[in-house]
Length: 156
Image (cartoon, helix red, strand yellow):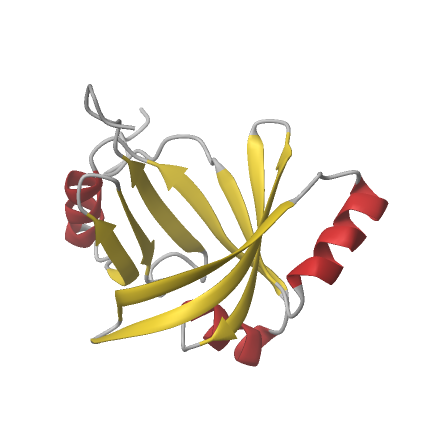
């Protein structure tokens, strides 16, 4: 008899890779693996929660698809994030798997009951929410939960 999981995540939606140079990494992955084209942009994040503190950062992010999976390359340009800590500790490499959830608050609460708490998170009211979950209970695997709100009628 198979035991039902405590928390059932949806299929993996994204693979996040921390890199030192997003432009260079995008060129390599396109030339070597045929991923792309990558869409590259810089993002400034303010007021996120990281552990027990709040912070700001600037990231360069590159996105491409490989079938149903989104490939995300993340370069930290400024600030302290789980990505900058990962880069110092492990160098470049696979950082996280992202799962799109329908009810962010319910899923983070369900994982918290299993001892998997948010490490880095931010909510954009009415738009989106994300959280990287602590890895000490997940064999070092960083899990990102992501919820994108559907626009209400009359909104873009």
